[in-house]
Length: 505
Image (cartoon, rainbow, N blue to C red):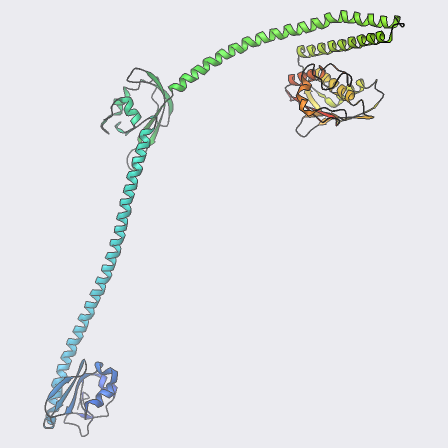
């Protein structure tokens, strides 16, 4: 008796084993089951009916077969056939075994087909993805080709518009590239490249000296087809057209003929200008010497009659006390005018000496010199005059001429502080290295500051402050001869400040 033949009816048919049916027994292997009804087996299997394999027998009027699962059959048999039921069940189970093998083969084939279908789907997806990428790359490549063609066209247009001669040659001397300017010069608009040799271009270049080498900047003369001679500035540079190929040689030539002509013209003008300047300098020096000699001679020649006028006026004023008051006033005015004229002559002589004197620079203490000049100027002044002088101001200059500067500046400071009870004069140096002499005197209108250093220009009337208008002009002449400059700052009634520089030689 085998566990493949099970009976839910007791007594069982021959060859069957009476058991209480369980789901495990029905699902363990292909089985033949004799049951009182099909419903009992179906309820027992439930949702697992498609996993059961074998045949379920129930009594019926004849032999009938029904499929109730994937490999599960239902057969009705008459009661007369129960004695041979084991034989019938064995044959059915053999058929089920064959069906199972076929089913497994079909399942494996189905799985294989599914795998192939999946592989095809993956392959199709990969193909579509690769095809899409290739299409995008092809589109990008086409766009890049269009952009490159446009850039090349623009570059070629710019290349042809260059107002210079440009061409490139390979290592064998073949011409690879030539621009429109050189084509026009050659008179060969249909030049075939790269068959045309560089040597074919050489006949247009009549060079003076050696040809420029790579990376060399030189000049050469070029004879045009019309016979005119032009000067070109030439530079040759390596041009890498391909990674593996030998570098080409790019030649760029700029026509500098106009510049050369202009330079020659400027050189001629400079030579003419230098000659004119030299001639004018000689003439000016002669005029200056003549003017200085004239000023010196006139000043001396004026002294004799001026001295006579002053002497006779003083004698007349002393020996004629009986003159009328208005006549005595006229005599005093003559004497005062004579004294002013004498002072003017002295100042003119000083200015002439400043112009003629040689410049002998030496290092000395400007502070000490200022103190000496100040002491010599205030001996006849009864006011309180205070000089605040910064000590230790060392300069490199001509002390004789600088003494003239200090005599004029300190003399003016003393004169224009006359109305102050206490005159305060300061002499020092600023942070930028310039020297400054200031006072608390009358001051002046700053809009007329430039007139101070012009000869005979005065900003105060003779009745307010005496003077000739030569002193500051002499000061400026001395400072200028030392290579420095002088300027003044002031406000009316707030004193004045005179700044000057003395650069070292």
